[in-house]
Image 1 (spheres, rainbow, N blue to C red):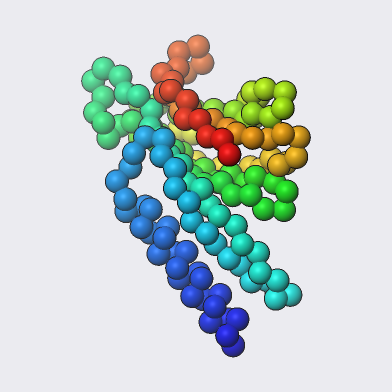
Image 2 (image 1 turned 45 degrees about the vertical axis):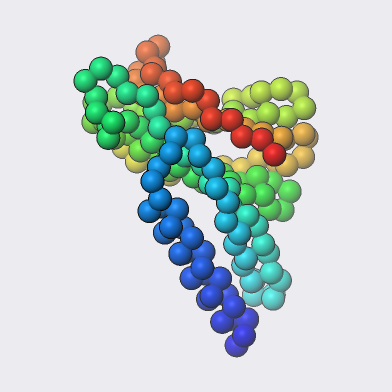
Length: 159
């Protein structure tokens, strides 16, 4: 019974932290961290820290601040991998897509890993092995069409 109570308390705490992060004012390319514990059926406790990040696109002539594209998400390390969970919103309604480029760094340099694309709201999940010198990543967000993108600056992260 105490394990169930601990699991429920941890779930409530994690939900409160997520709600607090969602209610906080958004800042371009910010990061924060929360710790989550999960107790599995075999009574093994797995603990990992979620690292939050977010960013906005620039905005062009005639657009208001609320029309900028936006991404937010988190990553965590577990079982020898880095897991990423990213939400992307295209909020300007101009029929052009929003693109988020994910690049990662390892012992051989920078590599483009994923390009996330949406015309509205998209949820993306992916992971990379922590082996091979994986030591950082960067995101950038842009709007437009092929050959004509409005890119933001990169938001770099390393550990």
